[in-house]
Length: 192
Image 1 (spheres, helix red, strand yellow):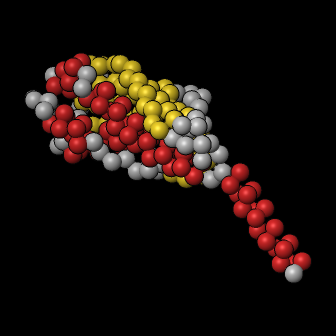
Image 2: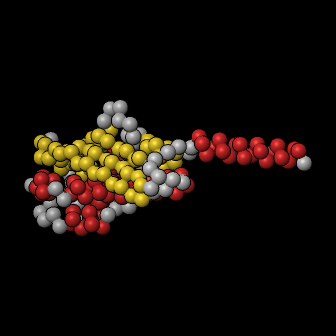
Image 3: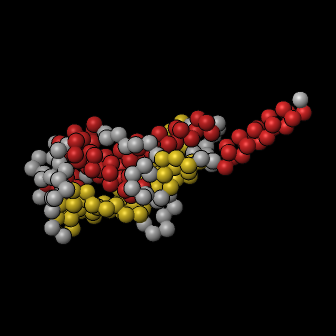
């Protein structure tokens, strides 16, 4: 009887340690936004473009992984969240039939901020900021910083708050791409 109690206590201790230590896992895969794809389709006279590298600003906390309470979330594509955003943008362009890896017009950039704060009792928030650059045959046509912030209802319970935060990350990326593709200067840059 005493040995059974010790085994049960040891199992509980191991489980609690695992929960407190946190887990590492990938962010949800990006799901393209129908609104973004439709916006891109409406750009008349736009040639197909390609996506270049979206680098991560040196020393950026949240560039390679995001801390969501005790959990670490990494990008499911590439090495960092710059790769995640580049892949998301490529998917949107591809669905709009505006993507060509051989194009002389390229969208690249730098991830400047990438954050999720899931520590709130009733709400959480995240921010993404990136500089996007459009070049055509080596000449810069567009160079702007886009920033989004999103808030969502959350919970004190980590079992609820952590998945909510993770699932809101692709939605934040959709909003960042919306901010880019609805900018008239961006439209002009890829159209000419």
